[in-house]
Image 1 (tube, rainbow, N blue to C red):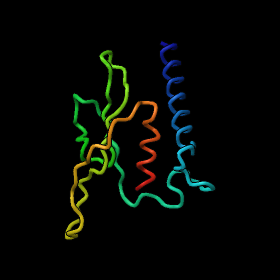
Image 2 (cartoon, rainbow, N blue to C red):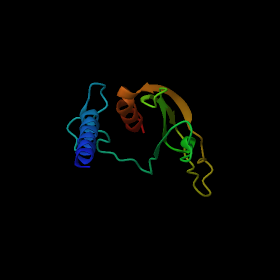
Image 3 (cartoon, rainbow, N blue to C red):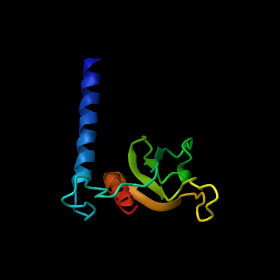
Image 4 (cartoon, helix red, strand yellow):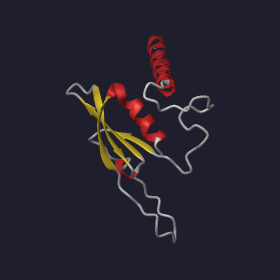
Length: 127
């Protein structure tokens, strides 16, 4: 049992290191230099920002109603190979404001699993 817990801890630590590495990576010019928050800069999102992840057999998160929808694409052994990305969804219609409306997300494309953090970061930066 201890070896399973140790393996899980090391895996979680690896994932955290990968996320921090992607957050701080500026090779694509997506970071704000000299800012305490490298992705948002001095601005923060003005509303809720929803991201959902699912697999093709389960859409209980209603993938198209989220700002970013991520659908895992796996090989025959179940190993993730990449992701289909959907963007722009939301149910945020403001009462009596005719310029707001609910919207379903649209497909952005397929992303290899190695690039998922960079793609999500690029989408957040453009908000």
